[in-house]
Image 1 (spheres, rainbow, N blue to C red):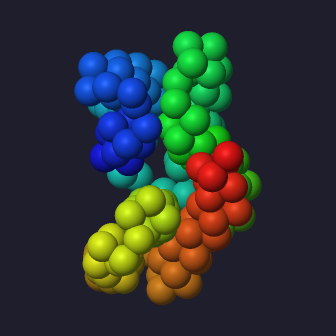
Image 2 (spheres, rainbow, N blue to C red):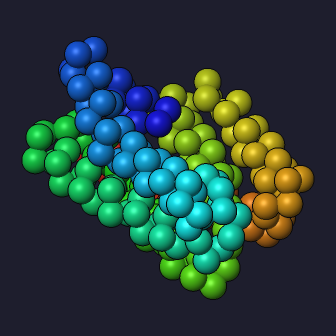
Length: 175
């Protein structure tokens, strides 16, 4: 959600436009995913909001990808700023790749999100944002300490997400 707010406010023509794009983006991409997750947890189909069971994660990845596609179409049709669109394309690319990986192996989405966010921050703000990179190993350590991920899963999530940002977001953000 923080990245949607950042990209909305960085690229919109006015504060009102930024609020509009942030509201639409969150309402279309994040809110439906969390509402469905809460419903599935309450119904007993998922063990927790942040499920640790690899087999249960696939449907969450698919749901997130579906919401990203719908959001992208609506935002593109509505004339959303290109930086925000680049963020959605990057998120969709990440969802597709991580869904494929998740079919055989669990990868840390938490470290991936933090690494992707830190990479975007450094790309947009330069050296002033380098401190955000320190959050990546801290997140990895937390996931390992909680025994939700192995070291390989945490490192792989972080490195792959940063690579996706460099390959997908960076060229689109410069366009």
